[in-house]
Image 1 (tube, protein in one colour):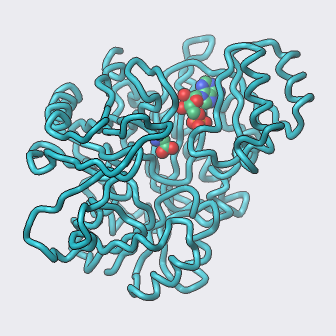
Image 2: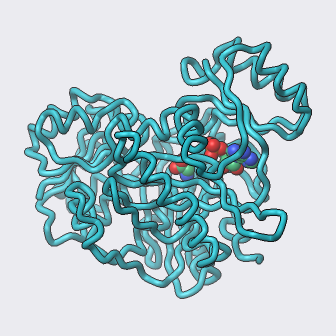
Length: 440
Ligand code: AMP
Ligand code: GLY
């Protein structure tokens, strides 16, 4: 089987590494790919992840048996639909289902219609009524979100009226988020612990993966700006079977049924960002914070090394609507993933620094995100040189290092020992990944 993977981050490297284990695989291709992916797949850096025509053409050129569309933006733009129209088998939701991530206005009204627990909300396109709503409610913090995709930056937790006004002005008047912020969702603030539940879904059957926990803030102690994610652990220790049962019954299955009832059957990986809230009588009330239409990054880098079932078999079962017939198994180890980022990320940063120490890594898997091979001769797979490849930084999140062990504590120790071997100028990483997940 020839498989083409769209995307070029750590998540896509982890997906490639999982697919690579399949005896069914002939060759992997990736557009655009990155330095690490280029070691196991043929990369096409000239084709961007959102270039729908370019990807359809490439799928044809490499005679792809499957195209795995991993990032949110091409899914929301309808890349799967275009590939299907051109006769290709795909992994990922169609545009009419990817909207569950592409529009918060859509997902909030879906939850309201089908009684799926989430924060109370209202939506606005005009500044004055939005501000009046916040003033009348008078409850802080209040959460203000752009309707559309905003690279994880379209959510503001406003502590007071002034902060709320600033956020609304940026979105609705100054159009700092472009079209994504023309409509805003104003939401009740929820407190509790957060968890990510990813689930394979074939339109009817939904199979949750082990829960994971992302760390979105840049610095230790959950301080600093929001990032794409600085590390993840799986499985999440505090997400016990009671929480899992409650989430499945109240959220996971109802969401998949709701999408089907709306004529928007969801096929692919559905991401449930949940807040674990507790009701007045101590009952477990998980609520949806957000849906995404894809694997999380870095959750995928923590989870996929635990997957024991062939990902190609899962991909086929999802596409063919046969997920109910497939047993999906996971290692019962714990996994810890630490992201190493360029100094300055998520704001501006320099690139082009050599990454050293990768050849010292023995107890972990390293997934590349913002890297490229230094020197043209290493750009494609196929081993044009026998010398070990050299890599340099080319993005904000540079690498994700994942280690597995029988306990989370030992997985973290192992992971950090390996992280300490790698260096590049200005690089930083959080030193506290997984720590809050361990105190119960
Ligand atoms: P989102 O992009 O919707 O996941 O929001 C980013 C982050 O903001 C989440 O991971 C939460 O930590 C936080 N957040 C979003 N919505 C709420 C809410 N209603 N209450 C509390 N925190 C929230
Ligand atoms: N880790 C958060 C996301 O993938 O959206």
